[in-house]
Length: 247
Image (cartoon, rainbow, N blue to C red; front, side):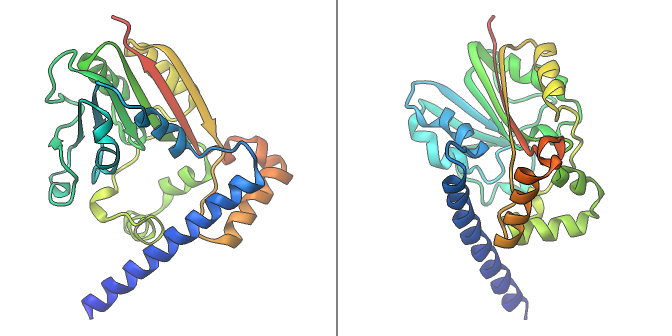
């Protein structure tokens, strides 16, 4: 019975991913020039270089598994020991209270959907600033605080949230963390990066649609394109931020 339930969940996840891929390409056709935040985030990982890269809050470490060969050294870091068994290597344990990295040891630090889980974001960013070399960069992709999905995330019971993220995004329980949203507006992100010592800050926001249902996709697109809601923060889902350590 347990195996049957697990097989059913795996099938549902596979179908959801297939639907998401189909709707991603549909949006590309409907909105020429549209880029998903994932695309822009991963553009920073595609160019071959001799650099040292660390992906913080890496989960199962998919980005390092995909792009490690483009760097002289690449590793993922997460605080949760439960991830060790299934995380791609290289992978090490650490958190923002004190990363196990030497001062000025990294050229690039990335964070994908991690900023919303920072309890003390400026302290975390200062720790990242410490481990970057002069001229090193931070690149982070995060959810926006007032997107309707983020607002829903804050009111859903934890058990419901874990179940939904498992079915719709293929996430396991250990991939779901408490969200604080303490640097998740464009102004908060810019202010936190500046306070931590970063310069050359660039921030871009995105209007995202959940892509687990064709009907739901078109409902979201209608509200975005044809109602006043499309001009509000409720429809802005993610942002991509960059900063440089000058000294």
